Image (cartoon, rainbow, N blue to C red; front, top):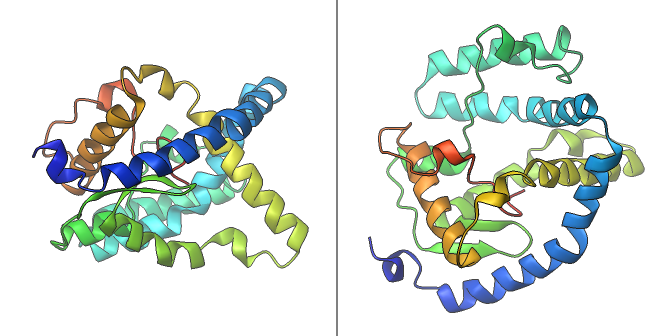
Length: 219
């Protein structure tokens, strides 16, 4: 598919991308670097694991919606092990015993159901997406474990920590970006989403480089 076909909204997308990139460069990235500098490696990994664990119920639900009971069962066991033995997910015991995480979301589920991705779309603050994936984000906004926290300061602190931890995880990955940042991120995102919807049945040229559909601001 030609880039113009996948990205007919490119003029608008580039404006949004520039806004996101400016915000990232002068606010979020410096905070993430500071966070990484003062946070021990084991604590940084633990915090990232903790938030991944909070997202496991969403993975389990989407596995079921995609007709993958085996993956749903594996992720359920992973959630149980990591939440208990793994101290609420801080220690990824599941991966150590062969229970790998199945990263599923509603956008992938809609893709499995045959819903076309639609044009590429850069969302303010959230980053690369498509029309389908953008719409699929709406339910996840209201289905968040952190939203169940009643104490306002604690809830907002958890949200902020999640964003900063997520951005810190991307510091190493973004080093592979070459040439025009907008084009590179767009092409890698679209290829990776196709790879995930098809469960790896098409080749993903970015898989070995550590790129995933969470580059940049995809949170």
